[in-house]
Image 1: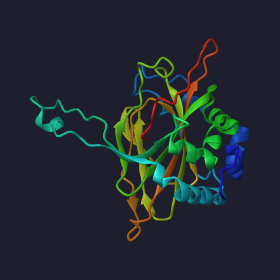
Image 2: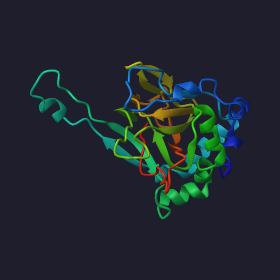
Image 3: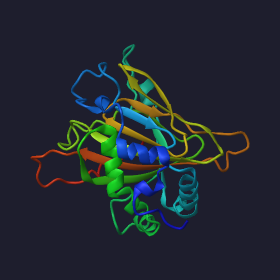
Length: 268
């Protein structure tokens, strides 16, 4: 395989194709959740769907990304500032800013080497395909804009994303929520990595992010973090997880001059 298929649907397994046809049974969890509502009420608007990609396509996609994209992701590190401790003057006033260590490629500029490499292997076309948007709508039950932001993230041993909520109150298109779709491609050297998210006001929802061929749908914002990727003993040099990401705004019938969500980067 030297190119992704033009349509996401071509990569789906039999259960994935059934999900695309029939939809998700519990779309109610995605309805009516806004950042202004009580964060402790209702079910977290998230669906984690293992085995959505065929094993053959997942393996071929991993190999293609391994062969073409490592040179085009850049490492981002945001450490916990020591001032979060040394700057405290009162007990119990600690605040934790977002910390992370990931490798990522943004595709905002067609002139960038990352954009050209992703376009050459068909990654951008697949992430922008109609069947990907339809899949997101079938799972969430929400009408979504077709223009979308896309991103590629690479996790290697020790890479993680600390607690954050992805709320964008200054963005009129996103302040009432938006939808993220994540495709996870994970090789045999990975032992585990978990997504931890809020459920009923507590960080108690735990999902196996290192599930090869899984797809996850989120209606953000809500609190979540991704644990450090752990390699199997002796596999530290090859353990790798690719995350393919698309971000959709909710469709508003009266909206005019809609602009894409590409400016909102993820670190999930």
